[in-house]
Image 1 (cartoon, rainbow, N blue to C red):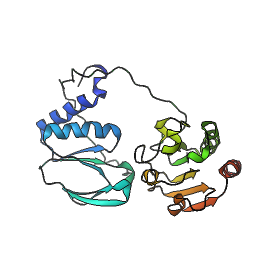
Image 2 (cartoon, rainbow, N blue to C red):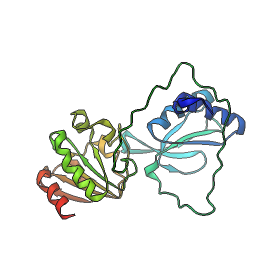
Image 3 (tube, helix red, strand yellow):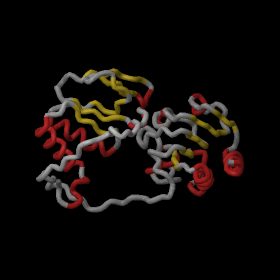
Length: 253
């Protein structure tokens, strides 16, 4: 237990993980493959002398895991033999949600006197608030790319997302162009999503983007370029001008 908001720092979480392992001698320490998870798991691995296995999409045994390489174009089978302790981060979208039953239970333990890192100070947190579902957990995601032309045109996608009860996302090209903030970015360097429905509007389908959404249950692509790579992974494709198709789709939903 750390003082104040220092528990939100990766340095403090690392100290808690190391302290808990020293007390219990775990066989596996598991984190989510998120930016925050990567931040402290690597630090914990350094202190514990263990090489973490990151972004696991399949567990084959207690020491053998599968993780993607090259933006998801290849899968590697990794056997962790360097230590009895395994540090792994799991890609949440690669696994189905476990059913909650009456027998489901977990034990929460409070560790006293977890040392905070004196060289790092927590100052503040800036969180954008929205009435829409969180991008990482939404069942429907409507994303736009460079084809949106500017940020104002994302209002078209917001209207469709609101009709479907979904979240709005974007490609890296749209974010780099300044159309939308980077917390909407879907892809290898953004958020990895796997909604029931993913609608890609004006997105060409670069490998970097596909690695963040190709596990979606149903993919719909709207693009006026019939040769766009996004159509190779789409379940349904519409070759049309998104500025005509999206408003019509929104009206008829």
